[in-house]
Structure formats: C-alpha cells, structure tokens
Length: 352
Image 1: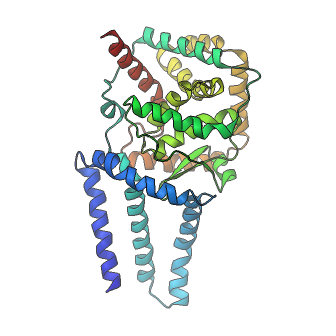
Image 2: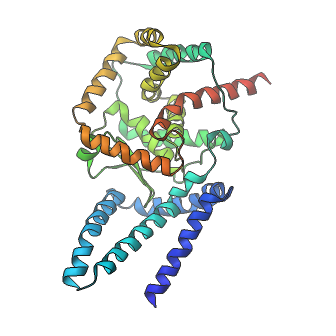
C-alpha cells in the first residue's frame, strides 16, 4: 500500500513538472510566486551546514545507483527487474526534486520579457563604440596594488542585487540578508573539467571552485548568486554579475566585473568586426591586464583534463539543450548582447 501511495504521489509531481514546462505562463508563476518561498526555506536550512550538501548528495546517489542492483540481487535475492525498477523510481524522484526545488525556473520568460527590454541588434559601429568604451572602463579600474578582499564580496553582492531588483531588471531581491558560498567538495575534479562554480538545486545552495584566483572570486560569486535567485540562462547570469560588480562603489569589484567578460567582448569583436579589429582592441587594453588574462588561461589549462573536459562539455550541452536554453553552452557569450540591449533601453528612457 505504501509503495502504491508513494508512486501515486510521484506521478502527481511528474504531472506538475510537465505541466509547468508545457503550459505558457505557469513557468513565470513558479519563478515569481513559488520559487522564492522554496528557495527561502531550503537556503535557510542548508545554510546551517558548512559543506556543500548537494555535492555529497550527488556523490552518494551515484554510488547508490551503482551498488543497489548488486545489493538487491545478491543480498536480498530480488530479481534484476526489481532492482532496475528501484533505480528507475529513485531517478524519477531526483528528477522531480530537481525541478520542483529550482529547475522549473527554466520555464520562465527570458530577460527581455521579464525586464520589458527590447532586443537590440547593434551594428558594427555601435559594437565598436561599446567595446572601446568597455576597454576604457576596464583599464581605468585596474590597479597594480589592488587588494581582493573576498570576505567583503558576499555583502557587496547582496547589496548589488538589491539595487538591481529596485531597478526592475527582472531578477529577485536577495532572499536572505546574509549568504554564503560553499567550496566544492570535489574541487580538483571541477578544475579538471573547467567548472569554476555551480548551483546546487537540490538544497538551493551554490558552490565555488576552491582553486579560484582572488580576482575571479567576486564575479563568479555574483554569477552563481544569480542562479540562486532563479536565473537559469548562463548569459543572463553573466549579465547580472556584470551589473552587480560594475555598479559597486568598490573599485576592485568594478574591475572584477569588467574583467569577467573580457574574453566575451574580445570574441564578439573578433566575430563581428574581424581579426584586425580584435587585435586593435587587444592592444588597446593595458598590458598588465593582458598578462593577467594570459596567466589565468595558463593557470586553468594546467589543471584541465581534455578528455574529462570534453565529456563534461557534452553532458552540459545536452543538459542545457534539454532545458531549452538557446545556444546551449554558447549562451554564456550572450552577455554582450544583453548589456547592449539594456544600455539602449536606459538611453531611450533618459531621452524621454
């Protein structure tokens, strides 16, 4: 009887998940009305645990999925079919938990609809103007003597997201005044696949790679915090992190925000304006910043495993496509288009 009741509850949850994903408007209702309540509770509870519960849960789940069939068949004398059914049901519960706790945010409207921002297609001259103006800001906020105080980052990021929420930028205000980022339990493995941060959907916590360099910490924290607030698109998370950091009164925070999208801007210039323009842009950036970027690439490449990285990229691409993220992993670079669209909207409002 208990088995049947549990399965009926599972079916109900599955129907809810499918309905929210498939019926227009329900995704926005979940993101605006349901998720803040869920996240407030889960974040509060997981905040009492000093380590990443989600990382441990995933690791134990993998071990359990592999071990259970052997245990059921050899120790409990169950059939192979029983073991497979047990694993299948467990995976469905994990699937339901993932989507009800956070994953249904994928069904919400995109940034342009949430913030009532028209999608803006910049021409070559406008992109060039933005890129060089961006480089001016990047150069101006750099300091050879900068001290990157990671302990101040959480409060600065929370304050930044409060500002964005007040500006109606399509993102929630922070659910809690105080927040923390947990260090990934498997940092060496994460570095091997090039992951610097992640959102833990099962307990509404986010984790940062323990190998992060000090100047990468603020923007990565702000990026993952956007995911905690229900932002699923990677380009949008980059956009919000950029806005939070570059609007800060703290100069080092502003530099970290500009620096975080450096390669995205460079790739956009190269793709649209050509190799010569990209080289001109690169030379316009301070040599110290170019050296920093080169050192960062070498630093992460020294930790990277090609075959593990390729496997992770393929899995993550499939995951993003399955959740209808336009562009898959390429969505990270949508940050430039989002910034241009937002700045165009702000300019139009000021001219009224």
